[in-house]
Amino acid sequence: MAGVELKNLSKSYGDVEVLHDINLSIADGEFVVFVGPSGCGKSTLLRMIAGLEEVTGGDLLIGEKRANDLSPRQRDIAMVFQSYALYPQMTVAENMGFSLSLEKRSKKEIAEKVQEAADALKLGPFLNRKPGQLSGGQRQRVAIGRAIVRNPQVFLLDEPLSNLDAALRSETRVEISELHQRMGVTMIYVTHDQVEAMTMADRIVVLNGGYIEQVGSPMDLYNHPATEFVAGFIGSPKMNFIKGRYAVAAGTTTLGVRPEHLTIGEGDDTWEGKVTLVERLGHDTILYVRVPDAGILTVSLNGQHNQNVGDTVRLRPNPDFIHRFDDQGKPNAADLVQGQG
Amino acid sequence: MGRWVLLFILGVIAILMVSPLVLTVFTSLKPTTELVNPPWYPPISLTFEHYVRVWTEGGFSRYFFNTLLISVVDAIVMIVIASLAAYAMVFMEFRGKLVLQVLFLIGLMIPVTAIVLPLFQIVRSFGLLNTHLGVIFADLALAVSIFVFMFSSFFMGVPKALHEAARIDGATEFQIYRRVVMPIATPAVVTTALLEFLWSWNDLLLRLLLMTKDEMRTLSVGLLNFQGTMTRDVTGLSSGTVIMAIPVVLLFLFFQRHFVRGMTAGAVK
Ligand SMILES: Nc1ncnc2c1ncn2[C@@H]1O[C@H](COP(=O)(O)OP(=O)(O)O)[C@@H](O)[C@H]1O
Ligand SMILES: [Mg+2]
Image (tube, rainbow over the protein chains, first blue to last red):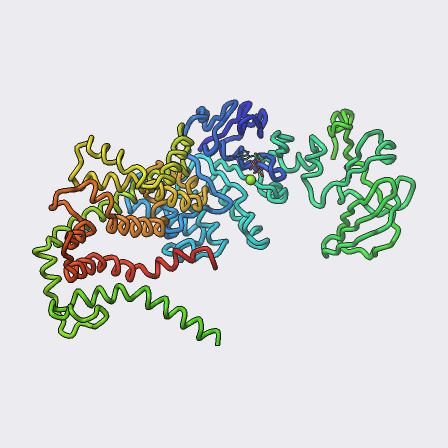
């Protein structure tokens, strides 16, 4: 096992730089998630670590060793692809044992390791099938199994769940987390889904436009977003951003309030608005409220409530959880000193 | 009503296409005495004497072996060369790739007949006139562009992630070629084998040009023997033609389904 270190790493395609000055230190055994909107450079960064994309600037260290110029096979990594990329002509067992057979391990050893991984992933009954005869979820497991069998130093996953349906996705999410705990291997996981990031990561790296916006634990990012972008990206439903007179009253350019930090209340410190849409989820009720001079705000209320479309409500932001951003999208300096949440 | 018209037209076309073959087979099986009958008369008493004559005295056993040797070697070597080249073009980055691509493209565009003379000189300068090796080299060189393109377009349909997964699994480029890419390239391999075999089997120009010695000849050249300046050995020509056609017909019958599938692939799926 090994940690991974990125020092002033950058990537250019021709004249276009798509990743800029990336600095990151991933500890041995850590589960790190790269998250960000589509096109922000997550896959490119992961593929540079894998050795599938050339490093065009800075240094990449795997287990303290400079890996910039090592081929993928010299890096001792395994990767799970979004498309699974299983070898179609090979059986499940052959797919999983391929890397070992390239290392000229004995048939017996290969069979044992494949069996072990197959048992862990409940793939036993399918070992002699071809990938074409498996469901999406089973293929996904084979792809993971193929990576496990190698017992790599670093385990890379690029949006491994995005081709699964919702139920299977949350199930597999849990399994990957368990796998990480069991193997204790360094895992780097790429996703555009902040829920996956929040639920699985030891540490989240938020990328945007080829820059690292923030690195931190899920709760760090939730409580202390370093930028307006992170504040809006992490958390669901999304944080409300309010400009105009309410922001000015709070002494800032943009006011950020999470939907779960708005409550229905009375009094001078409340904002009046009209309900435009209600989503009843049972455990939560989501109101969309048009507040004059603030726009449509999302409100997430715990439990079941009987507001209806057209009702006038008064919203009270929880003063302990207000985020204030300046015109650069950075938190106000005063707030940083105070700390919040 | 339209259906019958269509059937009629198709029937006429089929008769037009099949009749030369049928007439050739008829002639090849007729005793010489029956040659006075019109060609569309079926043979009354069947005889294989012309086949035996052509095969032994006519030297067709030798020609057959020569043709088979050249065609099989052509097909096998072409599969190896074209797939390796296409693999490099599709999956690997290297300097001079663009130049190579342009060269292959030029190779596609130049007709054989236009370069017959320089080709002859090149083969002669290598001392390979009147050798099977010379013909094989010439065959391969002339057709390699086409098959590189065929393999390339097939390989471009192979997901890039498959190649990457294999690299991560620790495979070298050659291991990826042999164990990941080629096993799924069967359609391209079969098509190459068949086409190159057929072209090689049927080619006359290069064989005539590059091999003058009788013992090196192929079937296509051998057939010319029957056409003297004054005489024409019709039965010999017919049975020789049939001998040459049989392997081709067998191949088509054997791979018929593959051919039809190859031609309709991608249309409905
Ligand atoms: N081979 C390439 N050539 C040029 N630009 C590329 C290439 N691959 C990716 N990019 C660009 O790099 C950026 C990051 O891409 P990617 O890492 O795939 O984003 P993500 O995985 O976060 O969606 C995108 O703007 C994309 O257009
Ligand atoms: Mg991506």
